[in-house]
Length: 143
Image (cartoon, rainbow, N blue to C red):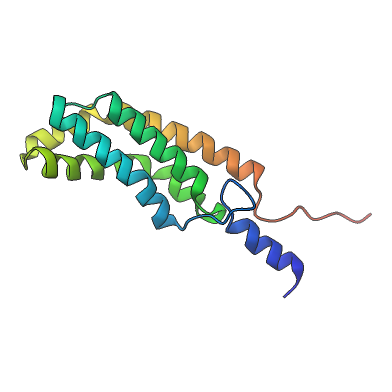
């Protein structure tokens, strides 16, 4: 194995900090899901709506997931916010409130702006990582 292959493998497994290995794709999902579920659960229990705590914890979780994931799995972190928020709404609603389907649907509808902002933040941060951390070193052209 050449040093170029080893260097490419190290680049693809790096987090946003190139010297630190990143987490696998499922780790990024968990990093985003746990704070999102906690925030939604607390907000749904206290005010029955998507509140400020949900917004803060969801955005922090999505940003942390995008920064912590391995470079070759950054696409997962970029597209996961709507899925994670939807899953977190269902989990938080069933665990903290009740199992009424209508309430889950209304909460999902109210969470759409949160999904949009979280997706935009993850996409922007992910694109920055893709551009700033290429998987391969550019090859020099010979004249």
